Length: 84
Length: 84
Image 1 (cartoon, rainbow over the protein chains, first blue to last red):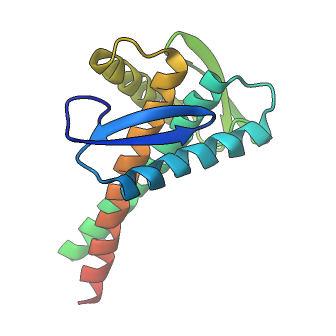
Image 2 (cartoon, chains in turn yellow, purple):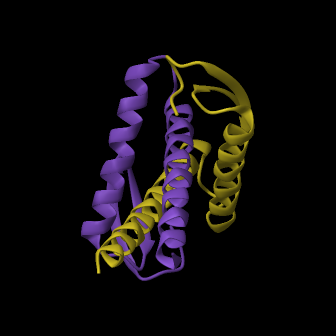
């Protein structure tokens, strides 16, 4: 998904601001993704009330990359098992 | 990984600002995660120069959640194959 140079445009609302997401994915998928990001930002804000929106967004990205790397480990394990 | 209420503290530098990440993970992992977020923010900035840091961070999170959902699909496929 990218915010430029692609086909479908979907406008989503994340943490008080609108974003137009341009990419191959349809609106349903983009709204689901946006809602996950919005939820995570609000979850992190509850843990640290003093953070501004940029810091919340960065820490949200940090949390999601962490989850991503863990899921990537799971994929590696599953792929190795397949070869057994 | 969380930014409060856990044990190890690692300070990272993401897009011009320091963040102290507190969690179960050691510094090497946290630095790796931070560097992925920083790279993604710079990559998205190259596509849309007019975005501010908060918008860049939100769109970074959006991109990573999208990647995460795709990887989750891959895990489902692999888990289904295992049962064959």
